[in-house]
Length: 167
Image (cartoon, rainbow, N blue to C red; front, side):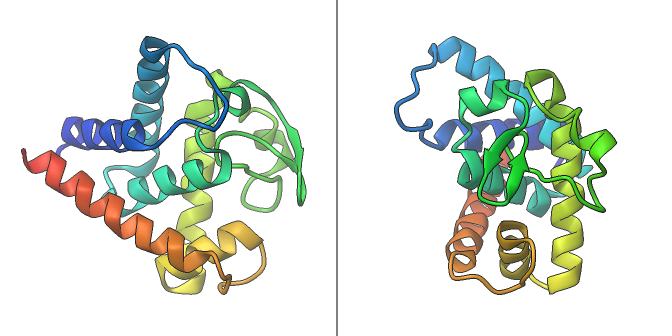
């Protein structure tokens, strides 16, 4: 699909997801934030619809697209320190010098590129999106009990994005 249609499809997919529990965000401000996020995802994926849908799913599962998380820098999580809507960790694919620039609203485009790189690598290593979601979530295995749900949601969001872009 053309880039502008993909940005619109990504934006509508992000809008369809419920906001983080307990967060109150002014609707117009949320629209602007999600529109900027959709552009960042589109640019990070070079028009790859499957990867764009995977980035939407991972951001939602990792942080529920939380405004609080989106605004902040590094935060403590279950595996050390994470940053961005995609809960990225510093490692070989995301060197520390890059990792520390991924926080806050201004780091969103760089974070989307880093998350896309990690998801591409995970998919190549595991051979499937389900495996990629498992490796992304665990950091060590292509198998994980929550991966099937993310894979199902990924296929659903991808179908929905494709149907929206045809209208």
